[in-house]
Length: 537
Image 1: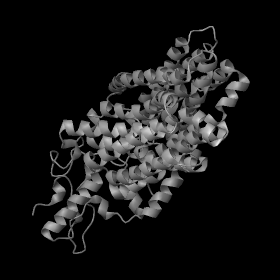
Image 2: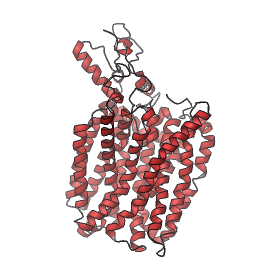
Image 3: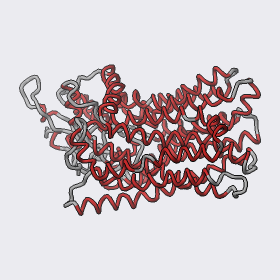
Image 4: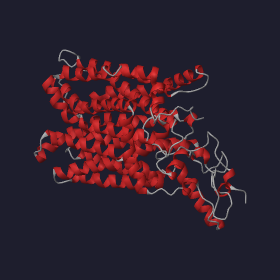
């Protein structure tokens, strides 16, 4: 039999590996790591160096002295129909859009519950701070889950994690929708966020499994919209429902949406993770020919689930505390997302009290942020072209710093949006003005996240999984914590100065993207985690 190892991927025909991503460009650049971390043990080192392009490349001998390369199972050439890259375009886009819709559902569910506060307090007699915990606990669950789900997907694939976690998500939503006391609802919200975060951890990887790098930008832009559009859609839909029906219909409507997503996953989302697909191919081959020597690359590794998860929990914090540039970029994105979630409390205060907008229409005030996010997604094509132009001027050698012009622009757009919103909250100013100006914040936030995610993956490639996992945890923690003091801050400082304070914080961050653009390569060279090699093809 012809050796299977000879049938391998070309550089543009290999499915993506393990991703901890939620941005379009982050997935672009993490070809080399569906990995843990380098040098932790011999298997982890092999895993770190493995990429899908290498499927079928052996490096040792089997028990009878023959080279393992002969028995390593890879793709049957660049046109192998089992390779997700070679599935029909319609099928790949159908899976992508459905997966993005499921990810939107998770983010949507985070903020939709803010519309239930009044009804919940009337029924249970709880304080507003307890109501806000339904948002905080859900978001904190979203922040912690990916640190477990991402390494588990290395063993069990994406589809199995999706089905199990989403089934649990539906069950927890049932508790939230029909819970008899506030304690049950709070517990259900945290566990819902924890279960649903599987899509935050893995959906970007699923999309990158389906498209080669050269055509990944557009589909990943759809995915990037999910975690930002979802929170903006929550107040719009939630306030409309709660204003016209019993407050419990908010979680019940979302339960129907979630149930539909689960059915979609079961029926239409296959396994797309390359290493797991190759393992299945090897298992089928061994069964057909009765030769146990045929193995996929993933089967040569002896790492344990426990060690993998523990490493995933520890390493992100080691890198953040050991690299000042990583820490600042994580802090910057965390402040941005924290402010976004703080607005779920601030907007109702401002627009009800100073603009006279009725409660059922308060959700529409988030349309400015939503439109800004959409503009940010559209502008992503420009930043991709600029990156290519800078690379061409550098002799065809790309640098992670070429992604940072987008971050520089976003560093100005965010404070412009915040200051503009702050000083148009007066009663004398028409309500449409602060909504329009909030679009600058939405645009800046999307651009900020996209640029930072991309830079962290390209600049710290060997540790990309851990860097992004740490970023996700810090962002989620800030997003969970900011709403807890939002009301008090706006009421005590006044609407104008509370929003302006947020603007001054982001204004102080402007010099850092410029500094990193000019000197980022030097800073990475001094870091033991920085990556200085060329970009992957």
